[in-house]
Length: 184
Image 1 (tube, rainbow, N blue to C red):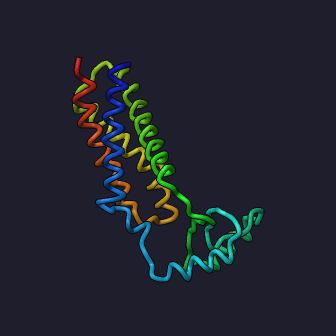
Image 2: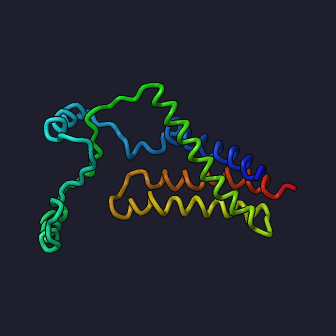
Image 3: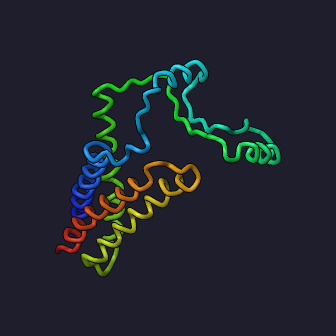
C-alpha cells in the first residue's frame, strides 16, 4: 500500500506539472481558446440573448423534436457555420477559488495514478517496460475516451495538444512508476 501511495503522489505530481506547463508556459491549447478582437461585441450580444449558464450547440433543434424533423434541420444546415458555446453569466474566480481548483485537480490526478498503481500491484511480473507501457496505454485510453471522441463529433481545435498531454504526462509517470513499482 505504501508503494502505491508514494507512486501515486509522485506520479500525480508529474502529470499535474505537465498539465500546468501545457496550459500555461507551453500554451499548447491556444487553438481552443484563441483571442478575437471582436470578443466584446460577441459577449455583449450573447449577454443580451442568453438568460442562463449552459452549453449551446448552434444550430440545433429544441428538445422533443422528432427524428425526421431533426434530420431535415440537419440537412438544411449542411455546409453552414456552426458553434458550440459554453456560456456563463458571470466570471468570478478569486485566488482562493484558483488554489482550491488546483488542489482538487492535483488530488484527482493522484487518485487516478493510485488506481493504476493498485492494478499494477496485482501483476505478478512487473518490469520497467510493462509498467511504462501500461502508463502510455492509460494515457491513450484517457485521450481516446474524451478529447478524441469530442473531436470526432465537434472537431475541437486542441486535439493534438490533448494527445501530446496524454503521451507526455503519462510517459513521465511511466518512467517514474517503471522504476518505482519494480523496486523491492
